[in-house]
Image (cartoon, rainbow, N blue to C red):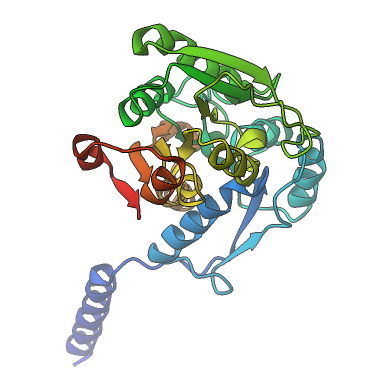
Amino acid sequence: MRKSVFGAVGLLILFAIAIYLLLPFRADEKLYRVGVLQFTKNNLSTLQGFKDGLRELGYHEGENIEFDFAGPAPAKSELGSYMHALLEEKPDLIFASPTPAAIVAKQLTQGTNIPVIFAPVNDPVAAGVVKNERAPESNITGVRLSASDGRRLQSLKDVVPTVSRVFVPYSPGDKSAAASLIMLEKAAPKVGVTLIKKPFYPETDLHADKEYVPADVDAVLLPREGLVMSRIKNFVTVCIDRKLPLSTPRFKQVEAGALTGYGFNGYEIGRQSSRMAHMVFSGAPVSSLPVETSEDYLFINLKTAKAIGVNISDTVLRQANNIVR
């Protein structure tokens, strides 16, 4: 009798285990704390994509995951203090975005076992964030941008074939800006354009300095770096007033009024990086997760095209992934 009872109990246990294993994934009961370090407001959509991706993977804010986020740091000099505040909360993971935040997160977590996921970084090797993208050392990995600024310069020329002198504002000393400039300078002779480069500083005021954008340029291209892109509204205003094509690497900025862009969708990069965070939470060592590369897309704003008097061919429009009408 006892054997039959024990046998029935054993079968029930095995049945329960089988049912559990067949259930959809649910994050375990552990409460994960994620510290978020961001520079400028440009990457808020990236953070939203990161949160949404984690939610789809079973991590629900207020239940089994919490985000410590005091808002984007308004200046690079303040990233360190923001990071120290996050570390006091003893996070299970740091989400850093973009390059300046990733650099600070790497520096201030050295010697710890706190994993860091960055999203995005323009060129993580050149920025000193990782030494080997295929096998990141230490505690940091994430999503990099593809080397596509040269392709973006070509897409600007495709959208507006008459472009020949392209103005490029950039932040001196910014490693992401430097990576963009290298790609642009290499591509410019092949595309058939001349680059007009000029430093851009936190105190640069496009409204007060009417001559900041030179009078003899016929397009403006923003490199992939936080400070310059954070002034997108000002650049859109100047370019529409002067009827200049404006190129940006972000879809959100084309939605905001730039004529065109070829590059990344911040929200999708956030979702991509959420899968990497999930693997870390599931026990994967950071060094086992190669740096991933984001997808690139062509963006066009037809409202802006009409406002500045640009006609875009149907051939180019068919190549666009996103069109703002």
